[in-house]
Amino acid sequence: MSLPPSLFFDLADWGHQPLFDEDKPVWQALAGLKAYMNGQEYPECFADLAANWPLARTLVLHEGTLLDGTECAIDFGDATKGKLRVSRGGILLEGASVLMAGAVLVGSRFRFGQGVLVESGAYLKEPAIIGDQTEVRQGAYLRGYCLVGRRCVVGHTTEVKHSILFDDAKAGHFAYLGDSILGNHVNLGAGTKLANLRFQSGEVQVKTIDGPMPTGLKKLGGILGDRCQTGCNSVTNPGTVLGKKCVLLPNTTAPSGYHPANMLIR
Image (cartoon, rainbow, N blue to C red; front, side):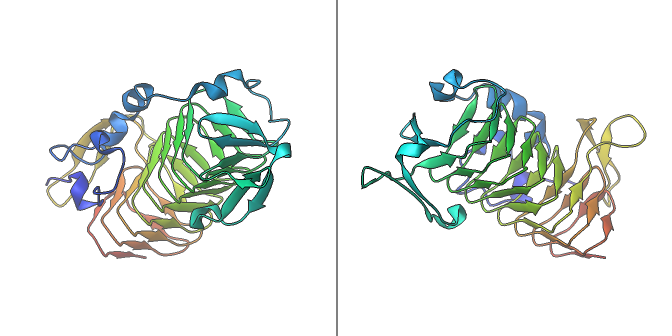
């Protein structure tokens, strides 16, 4: 059985298509994520920040320059709907992003799109690429090699490590994403955990009707195709691969392996 990226994701508007190879299984994007992100360019403006310390004041990122937020008027509207507004001296700063006082950026390899909001108490390790109009909320923990698309939500006490979020993916509350991929418009219910490490050591394999598929990965969490949904307090076992529009019911553990599109997992 072949499990190519197109079986799970609409890649037409995705800005990082080189990560995905139609001739390889979908999880190969995770195998190449570090090399891909290490090869990206990052603005130099973050190199001068006091490393590893909470931001002493709110900063506004506009056209590659960090501005003092105390000199700006900020309307904290819903960033995912393009309602975050920043003006300076009565002039609207189109596309400005806001890094609130108290956020922590560890390292300098960060790239934020337009209209991004990073709230106080968020903790981000390099490298991270955050797309336009995404919210990184209070208490979020991005542990490095996080590639986040447009209009996403990384929510309160949500931890993300070495993972990819396509556009409009939302992990709003108390979630864990390790070595995982969320497709376009995926929504994780509060408390969803995408486990990535087997109790028994060794390679994670993906079960299919044709037998187990080797992944070459010791850590592989969940891969959720476009428009999948999980209920509150649900869990996926390592190597769980959901086709488009699957639903994982609340308080349910998804068995590892491939689940075709439109499945209801209870």
